[in-house]
Length: 293
Image (tube, rainbow, N blue to C red; front, side, top):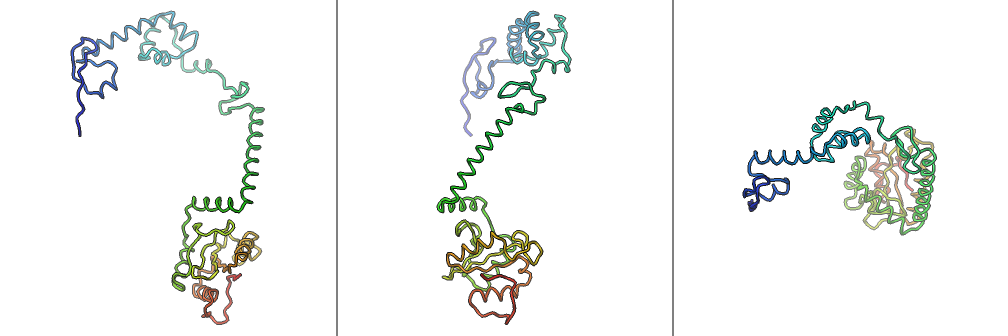
């Protein structure tokens, strides 16, 4: 640690030369050689400001303008106790805490200046209605521009990629389970792309084949995708999920849908993934609850 060079200055009261670090000069206005000198300097400053505290000055500031003792003290840069002392000397009545509320200005509308019922509100009823109307109009403009941007394919890709990357998605427990099954059956064949690595017209598949085959595996949660067998929905697939599969088919991808409850029976699930991938089905004639589309 380098020691800072000390500066030679004069005492504020007796003008004696003192060695002081530059840090003290930054923090203090009046630097003195001893405590006695410091007390004398303080008295000198107080006497100058206390001379201003005349009876007429306090009547104007405290009584007529309704200023508080603390505000007057801050303006004069002294302790507020001096003001109370002078008020008692001159015989001026000191206000009670409840009396300050009378002299506070009532809350007003920030637009038209009308007096409001409480300090909670910033605007009156009329001004607030106008403000809300302007805000909704601006929101409508925003939504219209967003719809136009979503119709454009390039912009849609950019928006979808940015939103998925911002989430920083990682595989959940069920996806991790399926990932382990796929790596066990077909090592280096399927890759998890649910983090936004592959986006097809705004849709992000869960697993995609990286070995030359155009195959996609989607893992659907029973609650979120309205599984019919679990009693969450009435149809096999929702309209959004049907649209998703149509888009995959449009680009030549064959898709396999696995529901969340199917992860309980791993043997059956393994058989169906093997048959979907083009291998021999181990379970002969066994029906699967998963959808191959």
